[in-house]
Image (cartoon, rainbow, N blue to C red; front, side):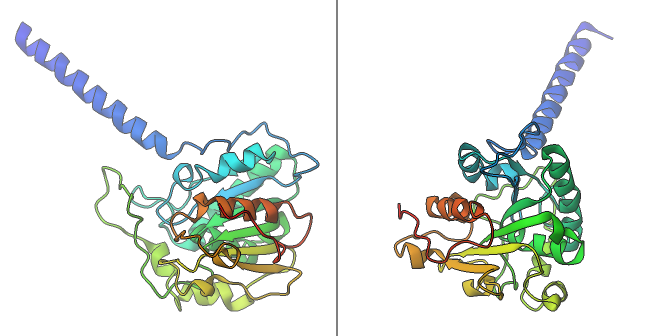
Length: 282
């Protein structure tokens, strides 16, 4: 091998190594927890006895979906955990919802084992606010959940189209969007019929739903609401509390008003959020 050939080979190897490192780093960032989440040494306090698990929505990673709510809850004294789930073609939360619910189950078990808590609180956005209902109703998860807080959840499906958010960036190996969960979340789908065949709620957990009239993804927005007794279910519309709040579907987890409502709901020793609770309109 000539000196020139050897030099070019070394240079090519260096470029390839750099490319692989960059690709690995990019893939790794998708699995990074949001600030404040997944401290597996955290032990719940008497004031906040239930660890909080954040469940992202369709197309979302935990790092992106919970970049503001996770540190907000952590600073309030909660043990916060988050997960990615339902990956297909490198895109999270696009697998069939039933499959994703089966991924949530062992994560709940791991959090309970790590913290010593008998139950957890679940806070989910969009699909992440609806999917836990399958875990609770069909996979025996109800006995492990204290409170489910859904932020713009697709509880009865949508009459619109579920499309990636404007800032969605598919991974390099992305070829086609095979989104089974999108089909599952259409109003009237076979999955939706099964999910709600046992009713909107199951015995045990409390439910709080937080919706925005500006939701352009899960429509109509009031289809997100759950039917159930007031002692178990509270449905809240953001604009009933803060009429000028312009927040839409994708950004609801980052809304300071939503942060306050979530913290209030989680702060209840029992039952859902107080319908009369008034957040500060920022």
